Each structure stands twice: as structure tokens, then as C-alpha cells.
Length: 288
Image (cartoon, rainbow, N blue to C red; front, side):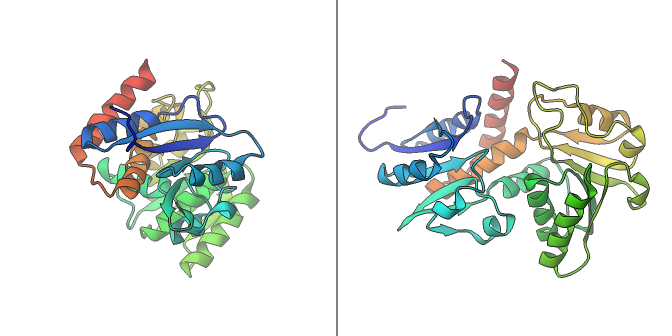
């Protein structure tokens, strides 16, 4: 693109940011849609987050993505926050507003759009979430919003899973979630389940790791969704397929969270065809 005096800048703040795929998403969208915008990553050292946000405001950045470890830490420095992001307790997208930036969470809407694109339905489903960290909590809130029938959080430390389940139930106003131990397969309901792997177990470079080894677990699921995208085919996904389930990785979630952020920044609409084109580019980038 031709960078000139009218070019708007967006970027990513995090630590680290060197291996991000976000520039592929946003710079391609800008080029394809004819938006005079460029997107760059910014490595923000520990202790400098407030300076990064105020600097982005002072430099008139159009928008900012936020990645680990700052998705919750950034909230005190925002002028406003979207209700979904406030409920989840994490922000990954900053949109310029009159007095600074408003924080949004596009990760969970991105996961929802990715699932819909893959033909995965949440409404009325019984869903098991592996993990009890911030991502698992956000996924549980999304499932509640999208009317899952039941949610089971499985974690090595049962108490952490139970804590999130209690928060979800309070939000839902009814008993929809339960926290159970990682090996408590017998406590899962009858019938096939949707399973979402919401930990970093199995992420590059630890490609051979998996949270649950026992095939008896995988026999209980009809679809396995791993939020990891590198490697593209995790052990969790392999074991799901070996036991008759469909399996997907988190690359499409990454794509759609970026698309939603771009749409918030620019008021553009990204077509399914363009989304698919960028997805193929991201696949090629990972495999290089």
C-alpha cells in the first residue's frame, strides 16, 4: 500500500508479539477493501502498559489489539468498556472514542463466528471445557450467552473449575455449569458432547503434550475444538478424530476476532469469501 499523510495506524500490544499473525489479517483486509490503514506489532515491556495506551492515544492510533499478558491489565487504562468484555474480564481490542479508547472482547465473538463457519452449534448442546483459566472462563460465559444446555469445566485443580462454574451460574441465574476433576469422565452426561480445549497444553514447541490421554474421554465427544492453532493438528485433535469426532483448531477463531476488530475500527463489512481467502493465507504462513 502507499503510506501517506492520511494513513491511519492500528497495532498490537503485548509481550511477546514477534510471531503474531495479526498483520497478515489486517494489512490484507486494508489492501483488499481499499482502506488507507497499516497495522504493526508493538512489543510492550513489563511495567510500560499504561504508557503504551496513553502513547497510542497521543499518537492518534485508530485502534489497538491487546494480547497476552495484558488483556486484563489494560482495563484500568480505558475510557470505557463494552459490557461483554467487562463480564469476561478481558479486553483484546481498543477502539478510539472521544476520551481515549473503549475496550472490547472480540475473542469470544470470534470463536462463535468460527464455530458457525465450521457448522458447530452451541445452542442446546452439552459442552465440556478443558481448563479453568481466563480463557476457559471466557468460553463458559460465551456458552451461557449462546444458550448451551449444560457446561462442564474439567481441570487438574477441581476447585478452580468449581469457582468458574459458580461465577457462570451466578451470571446465568440458574445452575448451568459444574466444575469437575480432569479424570471424572463418569460425571459427564450421557450422549455425545462438544469439547473445547482451552489451555495451552500441546502448543508449539510442546506439540506432543495433551491434557487428557484416556481414549474413554474422547469417545464421549462428537466435536473437539482446540483453541490452539500452532501446531495446526494437536494431539487433542488427533485423539478426537481417532475416536470418531470432528476436530478443529483455533486458527479460524484468530481470523474472526481480527475481522471483528477491523470492522469495529473501520465500519467495513468483511465478506465470507474474503475471510476464506485470508484464512488460506494464514495457513500458508504457519506452514512456512
